[in-house]
Image 1: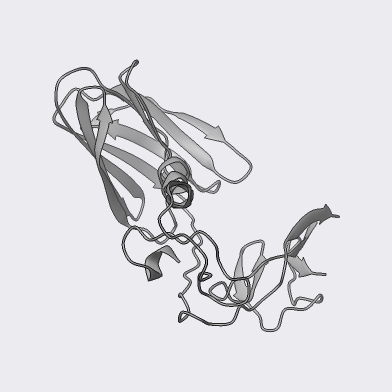
Image 2: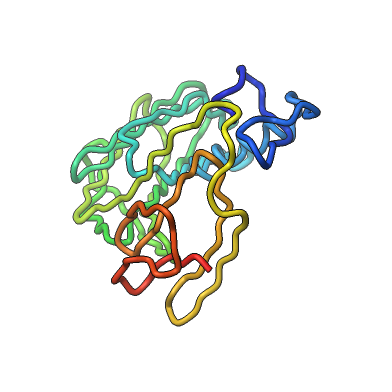
Length: 233
């Protein structure tokens, strides 16, 4: 409900029945705001700075539908760094700008789809060494270099890039909650069985291995022929 309140208003307690805060909540609490700010900075953007080693780590998990964004005024000791992201077919481009004195080393490690393959990486049109590390859900292409120039451009050339996004729409304030009442996940014979809490904005979704298909109402016999599916139990 951050987007539905006034600036700086992060509700402390949500109603379980309706899309609205409880009347007894305190809207201005540092820990309530931290639950929004911290996941964005550390999770979504993967930002970590270390003034002692003059280093900045930037490991974003960019949503599939995002084509560009920028992060400004990242302070690394006495240096100030800004990073912009742009995605075009076959390419991911980062532009890094710095001001201020002192050394600054950037470790850039964006998350990519497991289907993607990295053909090359260059820094200001010169080849840049990189490493690939895989996790269970994605892979990261990692490069480390000193930010010595006022503007540096890093280009990542990709093949077979793939992304899947889901856009949700916020309901009117006061809307009744809909969907499943709780969450549970377990593995049975390569099939994921889940029961999920669905606030009013989530809607009803059946998630298949290679995509998302809407289905209303959800049922135990989802019309899905893939090996992996979410089954309501």
